[in-house]
Image 1 (cartoon, rainbow, N blue to C red):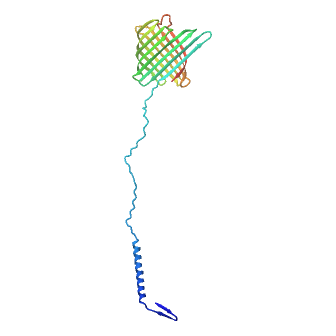
Image 2 (cartoon, helix red, strand yellow):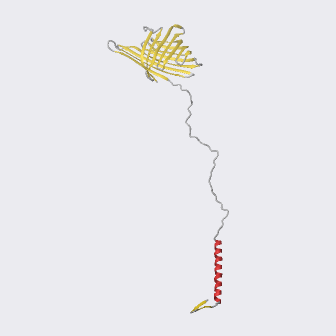
Image 3 (cartoon, rainbow, N blue to C red):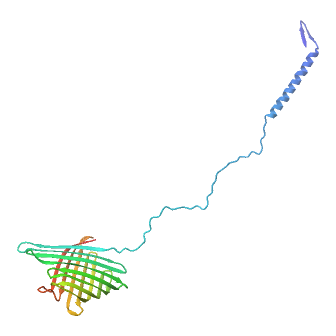
Length: 293
């Protein structure tokens, strides 16, 4: 300790001051140690740090793809439709003569590689001065079964009623065979021969007998709009050959549109033994409108 007096400085030695100094030094050393110890305890060392990333990867094997329901499979079977036609004709006169004549026909056919079908019907009515001079109608059906491209067998039936010729009814039915002498895209010509049975009520008398039949059919297409056809048949009685019937037809079709056209044809029927007082030959020339479907 130092004391200052007027004009002098006085140093006084004191044991307490030495002790206090030692205490202060020791406190400083202790504080430094504590600070060092505290610093060491706050340090944390982490080793072997592992970062784990989890990815949910799914692998699918044997994948089966189910397609949508498929459309129904239609068999590629060739279609052979029925080809049909209706014709209608009308002739009317007034003045010095009063005549009326109308006619109608229906025909449908179907052809496949193995079979051919034909069904037809026709009718005609006419009058002159209010007196009937034409009144007939009938029909036929024929089925051909082909054994080869040209050879076939057939079964045919037809019926006819003609009040002017005094034929109440006449039926024919029978089998036969046919052959295509010409069978091309636009031209066909076939001949037929067979047997049959005829039953009729002619001139008030019933009669029935066996017949033979010979026939031919011809058709030629000039193009898509014009067609010529011709048919003929003869049916003689087996045990009386001078009793026979001949039917003949020839005509031409011309198309106006796909469905409509014109038909002109000649229809002739000859009976060698007609009813008493009747003519042997009936002839018709018809011009008509045709509808195809």
